[in-house]
Length: 112
Figure 1 (tube, rainbow, N blue to C red):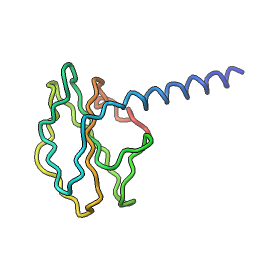
Figure 2 (figure 1 turned 45 degrees about the horizontal axis):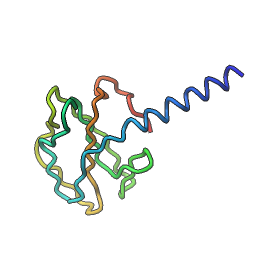
Figure 3 (figure 1 turned 90 degrees about the vertical axis):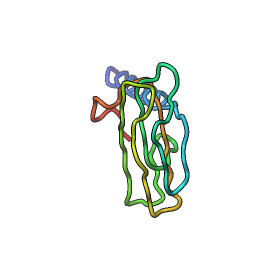
Figure 4 (figure 1 turned 120 degrees about the horizontal axis):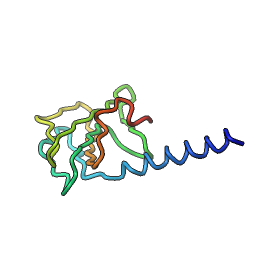
């Protein structure tokens, strides 16, 4: 019975962690994506930048051999990822998530 309660609690925590990621600011579907200085909003201090298509709490890429997850944090309210990102796959998407939590100081903050 105790193990069942633990399982339910862990499941609820997992669902909550997924729901907390629902803070998407925007996305860019172009092959060349300029994602420098994206405004996250008032009191939002941390940015999560995910390259790939985000669906059903997973990163799904058109190219199954390319799966990348990057974090970029800043003490300001802007994502400070400089430059352009170019990909050969025209169906590739760059999604930008801005959250008010610090996911960057924990290597395993997000598990898929």
